[in-house]
Length: 500
Ligand code: MN
Image (cartoon, rainbow, N blue to C red; front, side, top):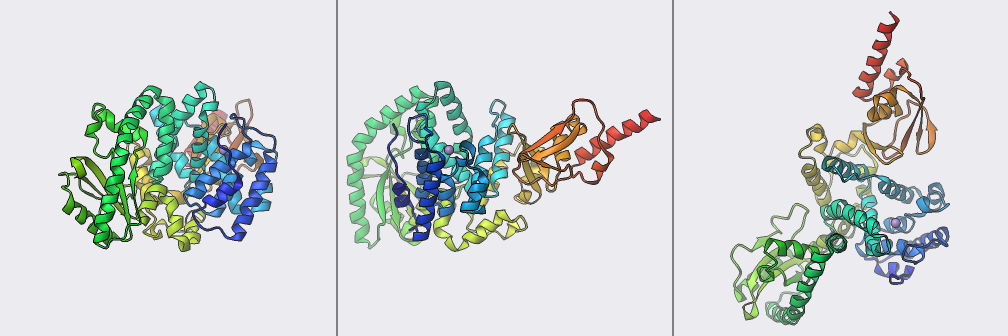
């Protein structure tokens, strides 16, 4: 059985002090979800609500806002219970319903990992489709994290598929969003299921070296504290950092499993108040201990692509042992652990406008506040995964969001369309015969006219007739894609020739 969890754990974990109003809302969501899931069990045997609370706790831990926490408590309600999304909307408002709807849709996307191109394409589309509100993706990550933590209760075949998908899709997303905390744990959990032997081997190496390294680490930390205090540098935190197992294994592999070649096996992290303190601390440490050539890295002046900032150096420490030192401010530290989620902590005031960025497509992306590191990350990522994809070269720009929408087939495939595209465009995008034979359409289960403007994220079902049929000339007046237009024209021309 997984460890018991109660709603108070979530409330206590929240990084932001929660107002009474927020606490009340979270409790309401909890009672609502508990009632909806009543009687449902997880494969582990635990009550279903336990899963929801674990997801909420992760989000509270990385500092997400109250609406995200509430949405996460309710995230499986529309999918798995009798309660509908519109009931949730009535009770908790449109924004929370929007987040839950996004999470549900994200869960329906089929990621066909067998062929690389499909995989990359779907990965990119999934991200773009949901980037309208990045909180949807973050909830999904926390959801996947808890599912991975409880993966042992599933049959081996499912374990393997889910672990593989997590390693290929979810961990890279966490990385791109800079949420190192979630990325590391996801990778380690996948590692355990995908490569059990290497996992065990790495774990053994870690245990041996970490154990004897721990006393040393504590001694060094105390030494550093004394030295820095003498120089009047305030230390917010100094602690040993253990390397995540999977990343340790990657490094070991590159060094023939020789642990003495891994200089950051022991790493000490020092958190100081200001950037100036960071450089001063580095100077003091270098004065006391000789640095290793070529291993001083200034990620403060030159942040990593995902926004990571710190000073790194490797020194010949006390007793001549080699160790890595990482120096950073509290803000840099939070951002490295919690990534874009940390922006809730530091851009409180910017939050409403932040939300507007993607809720309202009219906002020009060029006016994004500079500190939104993740927007930069997103661009980088698009560049990376789309680099062999000439057809989408145009789409590499962030402006892409402005005039593209993504709709889903009932089976979860994604169809990319221009804004104001109609079910006829959708039908031709799937197959010309589906276009020709279209007679009606449903959007999210409701009948809509054929000239309906599809909304981003909707599931579209095209109703067709069995027998061969010609498209209607009227369609030309409202279709948006050139491919639909040319298909219709070709069919009609063909028709005219036949008549003559
Ligand atoms: Mn879930």
